[in-house]
Image (cartoon, rainbow, N blue to C red; front, side, top):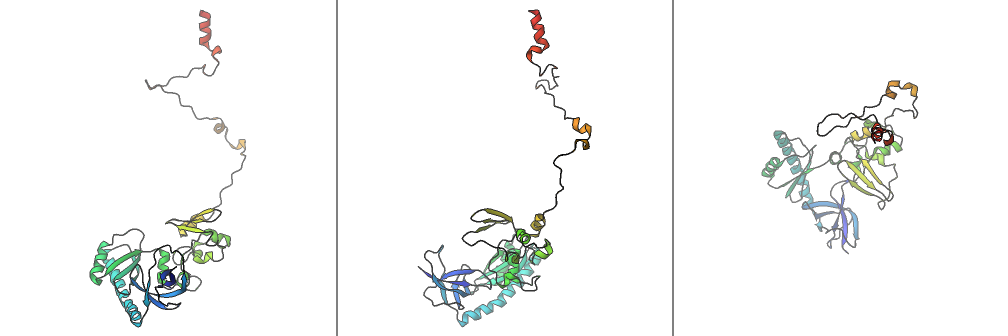
Length: 309
């Protein structure tokens, strides 16, 4: 059973598991790990513990951070700001419909990551060539959503405090308008949506949520499907447009029994004309017989044949 620790790279960021690799790393210590992006500097937040069967192969903790590693991380701040300013200028020159949110650099400066928001897909191959020729390193572009943008930048909510996603929230939970209805709040999109334009995360604080063993959440682009032990709930994601559509509008009541006198006589007696059958050969109307529908014994042809006999 490998010994692992939980490492966090950003404030309120996700916690990732790394194998200790024989290093005495405790909570609050800064360590250098080998992540998917490269060498990164993180902080241990979960003490050492062991697991039987990890879901996937774990990366290892390389060493406890030294003064040189901390100085290298501080020097990357100037590189991040320079890369962000240069990228914003190139985006304006090429008239690309995208917004650069922030940048990140690995500890060894072998990779630069640019975070941006956009309404659709963008061809930024020429932009990547400009960035690679300028900084002589590997360039990676990552598109994020509006909620991730606020978590990256931060801001002040309508309560007067810093937004929860920048303060203590590590992940985004699905929020629906039903949570506001259960709390009997005013269904006003201006008061229920945060600075990101989505429903505020604090709407779910006073709603009883099932335990992790009872709930499985699958998020898509348009919907969040919540599977519990008893039922499956499919909720629209918390956009302002879906919020406006979810407000119940009063429907006009229709009486069950309508008065016949209120309906004009012509409307009650008129019936739609039945289409006459067509002959496929001549494409002309064939007049229907007046005897149609009568028993065979009462038809005129039957009496004529009987007399002749």
